[in-house]
Length: 199
Image (cartoon, rainbow, N blue to C red):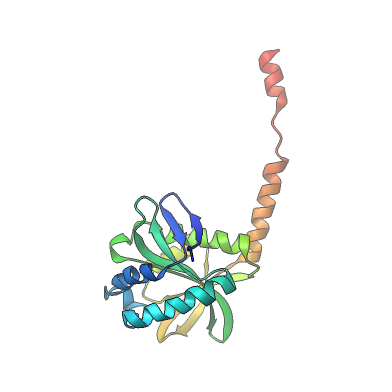
């Protein structure tokens, strides 16, 4: 199966992960800093087995999932981001996730990928909202959530970590975009300018 490209920005390509990609992603996870705020991966063999099932079941069933972040210039895998269904603090939520390899952090890639994913959620899904769960001392990730227009909601315990829950109202964002398009479409050029110039 050919992996589907979800979207592209000036610097990045978001697409479904293949088994070959998992080997590269596994290398990213070997950096201890990466697993400071998230659970580590299992063995490579287990991860390949899990993702084989993920490709067959999750991507086609939901139409979304966790995707690879690749550089548009040279197609290097530099992280993973996407959407997943989770139960957080007793509530069913659609969670926005993002992880960038250490060598590519602090360059705006997480924000760039996150914006594209939010665009996808607004345009393609009927979800009322999107959340991000971030470890309290992960200040860099909290800044990304702020840049994405997400708001702090509450503190939660998640996967053994003390976390902040951020959220964004997708229904409201969709309304804003529709209203903005209506305004743009209603603006007509001032033809008097042309008549004055050439009269």
